[in-house]
Image (cartoon, rainbow, N blue to C red; front, side, top):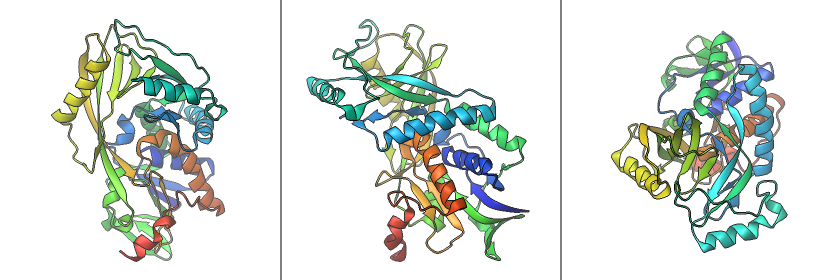
Length: 354
């Protein structure tokens, strides 16, 4: 079988890349064996334009939010499923310094339309321990990560684009200026392997910073929270009084099991935040492919010109992936240059010195 593209991995990066390849009419196959530790599948799925302790407007926030609104709605129609919703986030304040920081930024036009109100909101003090109050982050969004990935996977299966197998580099070869994998010949192969790319010998010159994240699902019938609450941890309503709690971040840990250390940390943070009883229903782990300079990896291998990578979205995968999947598509199909800030060419010297 001959195709234009062979995509390896169906996390958030591979899903969006194959969506745009499909829209463009390109022929492709995607190789993926679904894994429970896929960070994309257990992520909170939040698109938050204001983050960090100093309430910073995230990189490319205006472009990313607008692009996400358009294309998540579009892929919902293709999948005939609902997994994208616009949200308001309550961001907790923890000190007078926080209050002053927020107040100054809320008055500047630069933060519009994400800080549309300069009013504080105080949670029910019988349920929450937030004496300094919260401010609203508008124009945020949330994706039901599991439903998104499973819906797109079902579509790929329906169209017979998906090969549900474990990928091994040993099965990859080069023949007649093409990439050969088992019985498939492709003009180009794009690696969207998530954290596994850090162990891919073809791209081991890239400075991955693998991060393990853990989260909980808890049932709290008396909490009554309808919006996302962002404090030291995030509390995300999942429906039926079930909440996502997380996530932790442990650098350079790729072990695939939940730990009592992070469980206890999450419980401690949750107990500090809420005053109502709850029951833990699940404890989950995912491995994220983060990058030391906090910019994704896109582009062509410096030696093997028909190999590409799309990876390194870190904690912002659900906002970055659709936007940069489209950028990569335009590069692959129309030859448009990849932005230097995300092009793996920025590590050319590192490859040459390896």
